[in-house]
Image (cartoon, rainbow, N blue to C red; front, top):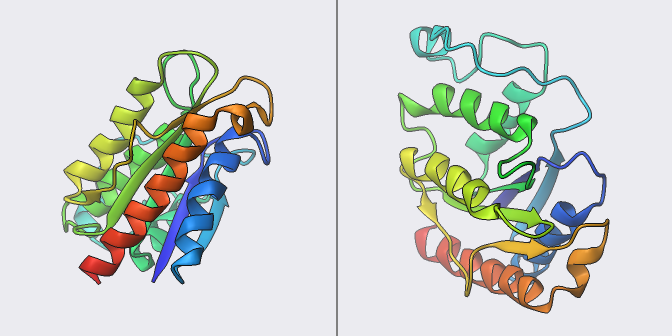
Length: 189
């Protein structure tokens, strides 16, 4: 089994990455392969709603000049998908939103992500993270995916790089998320 995580933070090895790695640690303890894909730092365009992907049904976005089609292919191959983002002005990063929008159009018509396990991971300095959490989960739910939960919303609190390591409840939430995701994946597969 494999889980792929898409890290929407521009900070390499920042708080979002640290939280995802906590989930990975539990998944890997259950023998589940994990891969992290950093989607920022490279050009990534938003969806233009051209609907060409719905006409061709080739599992690709018509725009092939960024990493979105590579990400979609990884989603299709994986058993589980994690989407992580820091909170920017009460929302996710633009790159994370672009990925969700374009992948949603490509995979939506054929329900290509149906019954895969999804989990949101959100880093936040102080507040407004639930909008990010809910938007990621909406992507999973509209794709008929099964959303893994935890002992609290899947978020960690920290402003500066590495601060989430001091958020004991956030770390525990990520570890529980990893355990719950592993359990779900084993039940489904």
